[in-house]
Length: 283
Ligand code: 13P
Ligand code: ZN
Ligand code: NA
Image (cartoon, rainbow, N blue to C red; front, top):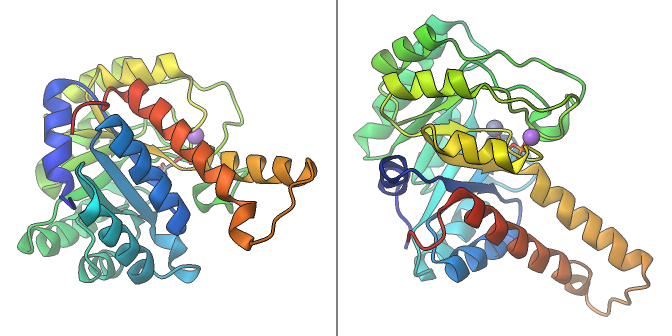
């Protein structure tokens, strides 16, 4: 069934595992995520990046996810990823999303708190949970600023103040991950995460998780991370498998023959992530 993120994330934080939040971009990727969740009996979050709106409408992709989620035996959340304004969040809410992120992480603290409070007020009025971000997870969000290393590590004082004043239900922190591929050796500040988790009891969120070494992911889950965002690794896998199939002489009769194998690979990769995150069997 389609559920809110509150239902799946509170349990994850309490029990010390993380729910995978996988970005989707078309019907096939939605089916690939749900197939993995059903096989693993795992709760799952399906997220749509707000910037995708110009390519596939949030209304269209939202409707596909709702349709598939309602048929699923496992709990599925439809989440708006990186909403950049209260208007974005409102579009998500209007279109049946069951969880929204407002990303004010590029703004000064006071402005981030103000914009996040606005979204919390609107979303809570209709029973929807909100994810905020403090500090800034840098990298290639949406793939258009690949060389920018604009990471700002989360400050504990700011995080506590943001948590207390914004009213968010889950909180994205910046502890060393980066959106997309890394242009340096990844290193996570687990000591900082652990300190944040001691003072902030709500589910913590790890963005930029693609290409982060598995031992670091495991350590982070032990320290309050209850939602893990994965986008680029899945998209890269589909591109690689499709390119390879064509180079090996794949003869497509129908257009869907071109990508069919690639989405089966996406399901396999998601199953692997769910086992790593500890969410398998937790539906
Ligand atoms: P990656 O592309 O590094 O997996 O980051 C995904 C993300 O944070 C989506 O919000
Ligand atoms: Zn992100
Ligand atoms: Na990454």
